[in-house]
Each structure stands twice: as C-alpha cells, then as structure tokens.
Image 1 (cartoon, rainbow, N blue to C red):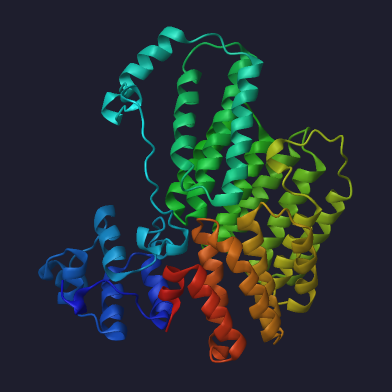
Image 2 (image 1 turned 90 degrees about the horizontal axis):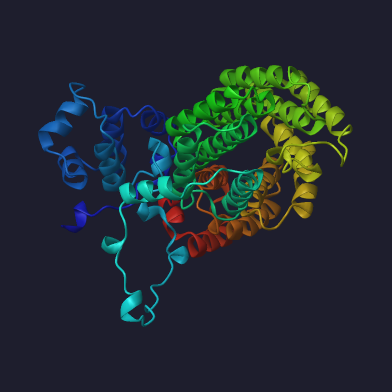
Length: 446
C-alpha cells in the first residue's frame, strides 16, 4: 500500500488526550475518527483503507448515522489506526508486542517418522470426551490437591509473565472441572470441586482484567461469585468482590469500587473463619477506593484498620492460599500507593521504596507496578533525576511481562514526564524505553 496509508503510530499527544481516551473507552468511533482527522491528518478515505471499511460506512459513522459494535471491526480499527488495544477494551495487539521479546525461530530438531504427528492426526475433542468417560475413576482428596497445586502454579506464572498465554489452559481446566460437577459426588469432593472451579473462574477474570478487557473480566468474576455461593464460601466471595473493586478503580469508577469492597467486607465479617490477613487486605482495598475518591480522612482510617488487622496475623492462622501474597512488604507498598493516590507523595515515597527492596524478585509485574508508582511520587516532589532512574530500572521487569496494566502505568509516568522531555535524564530514560519496549515507546513518542 502507499506509504501514506501504512499503519503508523498516532501522536502521543492524541493518544493521551482526554477526549481521545474517553471516545475510545466508550467506543465512540465518530469522535475517534474526527479526532484522528483533526489531530493526526488521517482523513476518512485513509481511515477506510487502513481499517478495511468502505468510505461510505466511515462517513455514516462520522455523521452519527451508524455505530460500530462488531468485535472484528473494532479490532480492524485498532490495528489500522494503531490504537493500543487496552484503550478500546481489547487484548494487547500483536504489533504492540516489543520486538525485543519476540522469540527467534529455532530450527526444528530432526524427528523420527513415528514422532512426526501433526495436529490433524490427534484425536478430536469428542473422542477425548468419550475416552474420559471410559477411564474416569472416583476423585479423591489427592486429586483435589493436584488441582489446587496447578492453580498456585498458574498464579506464580501470571506474576512472572502475565496471564495472556496461560488463559487457554486455565479456561480448559475450568471447563473440565465444570464437567466433573455434573456428576454425583460425595459432599466433600463436590464442595472441593466448587471451590476449585471458583478459583479458576477468578483467575480467568484476573487475566482479562490485567489485559484491560473489563467486560470479560467482570463476567468471569461474576461466575466465580456464583460458584463460591454454591458452597457458601464467604471468604472467597469477599476475595472476588475485592478483585472487582480493584477493577472499578482502574475503570475510574471509585463509587462502584467502594460499594464492592464494602460488600466484600460484609461477606468476610459474616464468616466465622475469616482470618486477620483477609480483613487487612480488604481494609487496604477500601483505602484504595477512598483515596481514588479523594477522601483523605476515610483513607487514613482504612489504612489504620489494615494495620490493626495485620498486627493480629499469626503463622498458625488457617489463611486461604489466595491471600498469602498479602505479606508485610505488600501491606507497606499498598499503603504508599494509597498515600500517592491522595497526592501525599512525601509520605508515599519511602514506603514504596522500602517495600520494593523487600519484594520478591520473581514477581515481575508487581515490581514494575511499584517501581513506576515510586517514580511518580518522586516526580511529584520535583526529584527528576531520581524519578527517571527509578523508571529506567522498572523497564526491565516491565519488558518481561505481558500486561496491559503495566503498559498503562508506564504511559502514565511518560505523560507525567512531558514538561521535562528535553532534560538529559529524561532523554536517557526514553532511549532505554525505546531499546527495551520499541512498539510501546513508538506509540508514546510525540
């Protein structure tokens, strides 16, 4: 295609313009097309060619006579105009993947003829189902424990690499467990299966949330709630509601976030087995919601409650596995982030820095998030050199994980750096950014 029609990055000033962000969020393509024309010089005829649409269809959209709702069309618009997937509620697009992370093709090893099976030679899913019926045995407690171990492994890999590649396996296991639930089982096995299915549904929702595909995330979180309700696991229901509260914070719906976390706390308090660690985590999620609303006193009160509960944590507590991540460094870093959301950067900075020094280095996504938060609090205080140094250090873990939320935090810091873009330390940060994350930095470049 002619050079003028080749997909190229939109200017950073357009991608970060509040009007563009809002138009993308609500999928107002009339507004998107007008902004692309006025701010980037991409006219309707060019939009049509890039997005594989007819000029008349684009004209009808701009005139407000037609809406675009089909997912394949929305994906073509994202790819044709180079709008990052998360802005339109899509998964990361293939062109957003950093080239530095694309694995080089390896030469296939020589295999014997017996080993050279193609996918076409494998049994179909219907045959798999028949074989499963023929060989199925009674489930035992050991089988349930194997399921739980696999879920814990999924969470570890999600922290290290992101959940995009894991999702098909997680969903497949969720469907398999759903099939097991259709059969008659002893109560202990049946209840265990419901708990496992609920955790798999929550994990699936989390991978969609991390990809900023919020509608899909909400659907799976809701499914997790329904499954947990079947066995009256109120602690777990509180956990799912807390996840939904965090998502509402990312969606700029702080009132929804507060309502969801309040419901989570109600569920937890109504369960006799709720541990202090769970209550501490929920209080910190409440602090996030209040901080996003700008409620200073309520935020500080919720932080105090989180610490009061955490002081009661004991090694012997029967904590559910899904809350063990909430350790002392996590409590401290979340406290710093809550202060940062309130604009209390001087209070936030030392707390986030201390937690980062103590944080598990295998949690790549968490380290990237927290480092970008630290950089933002430093920049808020006018510490440009420190902020750029911290953000540069965050790029390595950010490049190691496939997470639209990480990209969002990087974009927020990059935007905050705009007034200092020509300073040597900012130029050095941008050079490292381009080295490690070329597609992301390209989309950010003015």
